[in-house]
Length: 520
Image (cartoon, helix red, strand yellow):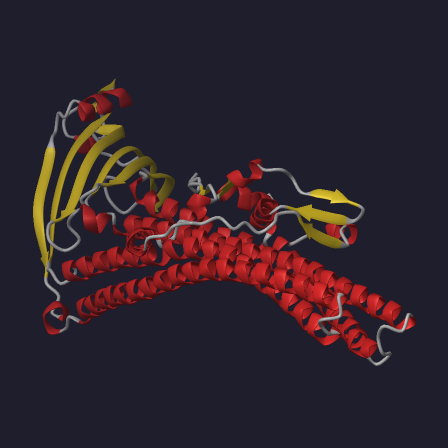
């Protein structure tokens, strides 16, 4: 699976994809803001790298949960030994002994930190030594043992510590991924609107240039008919030349903003060759978004990603402190066991003493008899005990516990500091949104007045009551007013996205969800 598919499958359920797809025409990539965000979430390389964090954390969590998987062990041994005869119990010049053993054990960790094991063994011994009353001999055994710490290491919290920490790490990595998605959306939104601004600003400058050219043409006709001195044309010509130079600078700015957006969209090499330019199709919206500072702060305290990560860090450090405190206790372990052996084989009856080696009869008893004894608990055995382990280091030094307490205190201070930062971010974002809204209204009025002033001054010029200089000044003022209004509207749209990011609702408002990482 490639990284792009990985990013989509592991977490980016982008409901924005339901929007219209990007359109290509004559080498121009036409994009709505929704298209741009969707493409960035799917293709952005930094975002694909960020997805690996939750994936790695999910694998760590799965590995931590393996503690509750039973452990199976099997062993088999076969042995044939021959030793020189040195006793009257040996037959001939040597004694041959054959053994065959099979053993299986299953071990399970309990939620309280104990270990439970169940084992079954099966063995066979066959020897040529004189005097054996059962030969070959089959021996079986069923054993159950239990070990439980009662002080140090006791409890579900200690047992599940690695699992809880791994789960906290997974939650943190998902939140960090959300933060990366938020930052990507904000960057794309900002880049998109700046490209829109540069394009619209170019249109405004072209309009101003056309007005200047129209005035220049009028002046030239008036010079031709003797109504205006030739020197009066110079100011209009200067204005046209200045606007043409500014136009070149604006066209370069468009390419720069376009390249920035291309970088965020992570276009493929083929798309780079196919699309020579990007054309944003959305226009900046100016719709009032009432915002309440107290409500925004309350929302941020709950939903901001950095605060959530800090709270998870506190939970982890609290667990580390509890573990360090538990490790100061002496080790007191309870052990208990139950076993049931069984034996069978060929029973040998001798004439008189077994030492004379004269066999009268044999009675064969198979392995099943031994298993019957074992599972019938014919020979029950049990044991129970306590082991106390006192480490002097627990009394002489508490460095580990002290470090854990210090780490917890640090995490709590970090949370307080982050809360202050969040408070300042929200206040700044709310203030910026309110300010840009007022600026749009003010610049709108300024632009309308500039249009009226220019129209009035042009009429005065037509009847000879004004000068070229004044008309050019009013044209310049109108161009500046239009640019300022456009910039204010762009700033307002970016500020709206910035506020959503500051309070932690950007993904929610964009209907983007980070799906749970599948753990196999």
